[in-house]
Image 1 (cartoon, rainbow, N blue to C red):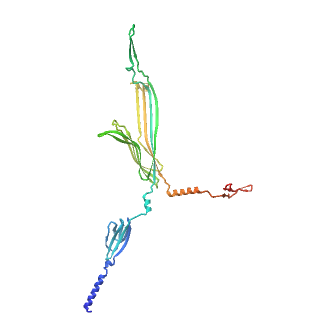
Image 2 (cartoon, rainbow, N blue to C red):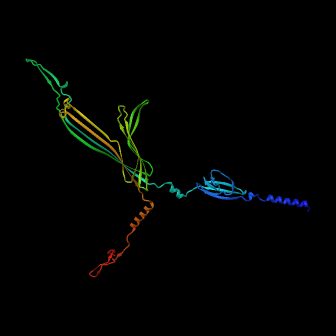
Image 3 (tube, rainbow, N blue to C red):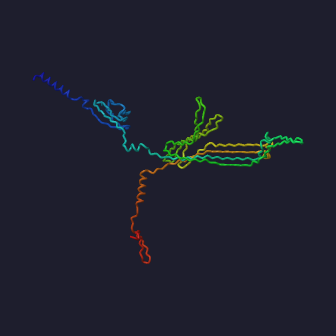
Length: 386
């Protein structure tokens, strides 16, 4: 083989080896797996990294720390993405990042579907106090004295052989005065009780009242207008088991029918209350309404004479009426304690075992047996027939 042939052969062999050999980057690429839960985070080293590139965005959030020494990877949503790290020496590291969703077990889902909360009972007591007093003292004179047209008669009698006899019958309506001495007083109480049970932190509403349908003449004819009245109470309890105190947010709306004032349609008198109270279990909160007082005085009798002090009672009647009403509402909160299922089963098992227990003792001998005249006493549970 000539020198030129040997040189050509050496060049071809070197070229073939160069083509068959892998590139430095391909020979030094490293593939790694990384798994992170949704919402959790992890970190990897950033030492010697020149640049990096993310795959599918939105699955994992990749951030570089301020000192550029580590990558913080946060799982955003379930899925798979990649992270390519290009090192300063030309090598590459590729991470295959898998974000897994948080899938609780079936038992955990069943327990978490209904949260364990206390049940709060609210006892409501409605009390309406009404006190009335009235009296009338004096002499009640009639409003008119005299005769009317039907009581005055003129009778003329004609008799033969005699003169004329004229008789005038005048019947006067002269009613006698009446003595008024009367006094009355009274006291009434309207009592109503209701109970509400609601979960801790949940609103409960109590409504009591009625409605009145009033015919109203409209542009297109007659129609009925409904007017509602009554009491509407909304309570939202919040119980703290650690402190044993309860917080009540109360909203009360009390309405009643009012005078129509000549319109033919009755109005409504409305009282609204909104408050927040804090108290212990077993304590009562009292909500007081508006106290209404009404007083009327009447004087009737002979003009002038009935106005004389003290002696005026002999010529007239003096009456007085007083009425006072007050509405109260008591709220007593308490916690409804339910027996847990496990404890209830234990109680039932104990009761069942007690019912099935018969003793099983045929004969009982006392440890210290008394002796009566040298006779040993033995107590037995066997029947005499046995």
